[in-house]
Length: 111
Image 1: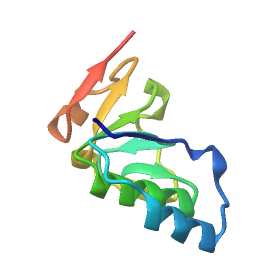
Image 2 (image 1 turned 90 degrees about the horizontal axis):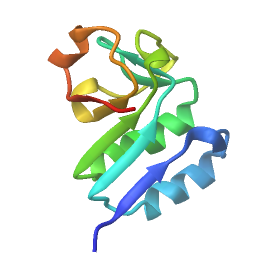
Image 3 (image 1 turned 90 degrees about the vertical axis):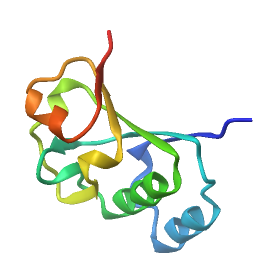
Image 4 (image 1 turned 45 degrees about the vertical axis):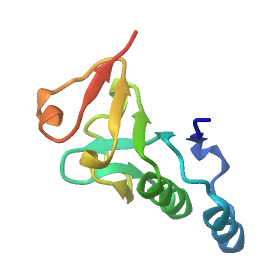
């Protein structure tokens, strides 16, 4: 049976103890889908929330295949904390604004 994990960043500011509990119980996933606030060649996938970045980073490390779900407005934006480098996850987006990202990761445009 496939294990699929989706992590939504809407629950930020969870508190250090809760974050540690989530990390301890996070399953190893075959497929992971996360969101991001920014996608940049140098900074990778970013978010303004340290706790969110910590959980998502660990999830990416523990998953077999990771996807970042992001609309085209996220490209070129940088938030304060890096989740992971672009090479660590494929991108599903509505439109790729610049082909420079293709040198870093796999990108699939979807309607």
